[in-house]
Image (tube, rainbow, N blue to C red; front, top):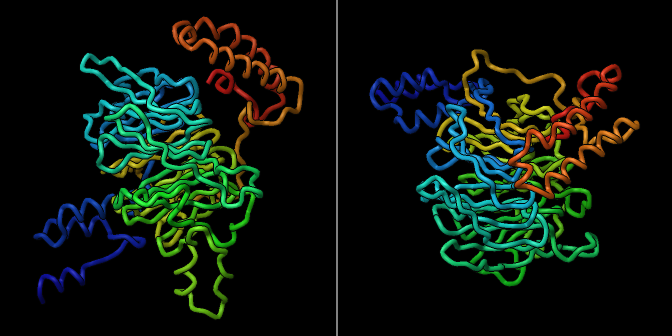
Length: 485
C-alpha cells in the first residue's frame, strides 16, 4: 500500500474538523501534511474553540471600550474608549505600552493601525464625527491631526488592504469619504441614499458599518439604519450607484431592522449583523441588484434543499442585538467561524458553513460589542460596556459545553439604561448625567485631577446605592462603575 493510501486511511475527523493529534502525527512522519496546513488546521480545530478562556484582562480605560484591533504582527493591541483615549497594549504581558488622548471631543468608536507604518500611524473615528490620525514619534510623543469630519457620528472606518495611505469612513450623515494620508483634503465619494425616503423619513441612509473586500480593494460595503447592505465598486461610482444590495427576503420592507456590523471573509463572503434580528452570510450571487428588486417567495418545500440554499443566506441565531452598535467578525485562519457579542454580555461562536452554534462565553456584565481575532493565533480580544478588555486563549483544561438557557437569559440592566421606577433611581441617573457633563466640559482638568474631582460625587452616589442594598438581588441594581465610567 502506498504512503498516500495510508494517509487517506488514517485520515480522521474530530467534530467536523481534523483531529489535532492525528494531524500532528501526519506532520511528523514525512511531509504528509505541511507545517502551514498543520498550523491552520490546529487553529481552526473546534477543540481550540471549546477551550477558549480568559487569559488576561487589560484594565486602564475609564469608560466603555468601543474598539479593539491587533497590529499585523499580532503582538500589539490598540483600543479606544468613551474616555477618548487610545491605548497600545502588550497583550501577552498585560501591559499598556502607550496611552494618549485621541484629540476627539467624544467617545472613540474605532482605532486601527495603518499597515506598513511600523505601528506608528493610527487612525480613529468617533462620536464627534471627526476622523483623525495619530503619529507616534521617535521620542515616544504622539501628534494627532484632524483628517476630516462627518455631520453626525462616525462609527467605523476601513483601511484599503495592504495600503499604508488610504482609508474609508462612513457616518450617520450617510457620507462615505476616502482619505489619502499623503494629502490634506478628504474626497467625498457619495452620500448613501435611502431606498425609500418616504418610509424612513430621510433622504440619506445613516451608516453604522463599512468594510472592504480583502481580495478586491475595489469593492466597498456599507450598512446602516435600513435593511440593505450596499456593495459599491469604487471604480464605477455614479452618485449613489450601488453595484448591489443584499437583504434576507423576509426583511425587505421591514422598518424595524437596521445593520450594525459588516465583515468580509477571505473568500469574499459578506457577513451582516442586524438589529432585532440575526446575522446573515451572503455570497455575490445573492444580491438583489441596484436598485434592489423585490425578491420572489422562498422556494417551496417540494423543491430540493440545494436550490433553496443557493438563494437564501445562512443565518446565525441565538444572540441578542438591540441595545448598541455591535460589530461582527470571522475567526479562524480561513474564516471557519462567525463570532459576535450580545446584549446578554456573552460571546457567541458559530460554524460558518453550517450555522451551528458551538460556543457561548461569559464576557461582560452588560453587553459585548467588539470581538477581534488575532491575525495568526487562536486568540480573541473582546470589549463592551465594562472598562476592560478580555483576551481569550485556548488554555482551558476542559472542553466547554453549551449552556441550557441560551435564548431565555435576559440582559442585566445597566443603571443608566434601565427605566426609572423609584426616586432613588431618578437621583442616581441625575448624578450620572451630571458627572458625564462635567467630564465633557473640561477634559484636561478632569484628566489631571481625576481622583479629587470625583471623590465627593462617589461618596454621594455610594450613599444613594446603600439604600438599595436590601431591595436588590445584586444583579439588577446600579453600581459606582455605572456613574464613573
